[in-house]
Image (cartoon, one colour):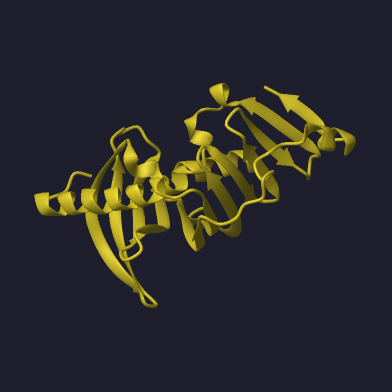
Length: 215
């Protein structure tokens, strides 16, 4: 269940406007964010994740971190570590003492946590929404509505730091009333990453007695 919850975040960690100017403004801002992402050698994020549904009496909050370099990533959440070395995705679950290895050819694009920052590039209509001052930061929200009418998502509010051109918050509201929020609490780029940060040492986990599952 924890792995499934992680993968849902990847889909987050992601409408036609009434007025043409607001649609153009949304496109410009989103492109600026995407261009800045593409220019970075690596990115390190820490985030808070909340899940809220009043009807079901659910209110959960957790945190995690992710480090990205090109197609490689290391994602830590709910005690689970997920690595990708561009060939395979490795999901390490210490609680169960198991590792699942999935070829990237079979993993599917939804398992890439980079979507926390650029999921909006495909599959959504968007419009200019409210602006919010948080401390000395101006956060501009863009509302995204799935093009696919069968989607479980009603809409997403994507909060962007207007000065830094960085994603600050992603608020997803489901058609069932569930609201999930990812808030970036720390954003660093081009830091010195350990050479083996994205590497998986299979022998290490075999020696620890972990069960290795290969799919």
